[in-house]
Image (cartoon, rainbow, N blue to C red; front, side):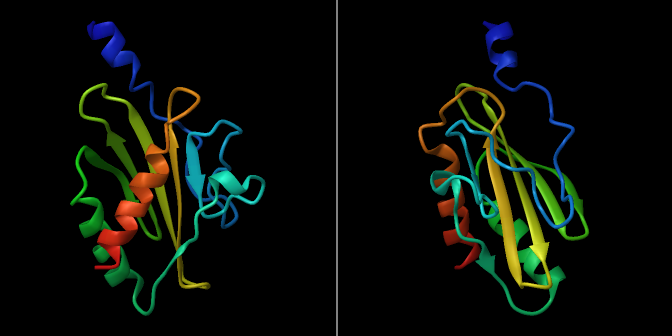
Length: 136
């Protein structure tokens, strides 16, 4: 049983981050959503706008993230945040990245499951909930 539970988390990806103003593209599987997904309408979600100071925006975003269960901020550097979300029972880990783009005043994000093919809409639901918390 322990082997099964530990296998649900997989290892942390080493290809995440911002590359030329872009987060990693979503895979073809239906277990990822992104504001920068231009190849698949099913994985696309709209970016969140912000006005003014990036530091204040980041603080507000982190406050919303910390209201969600099972979170661990892995990277918080400059205009980039990487968070691991771990499900309570099966311990599945999803990687969520945020890119605060000052030039467009948008928060871009990518939320992807590490394992499996389908997430049954979990990433989309998570980002919708985070949007609600962020916009409170």
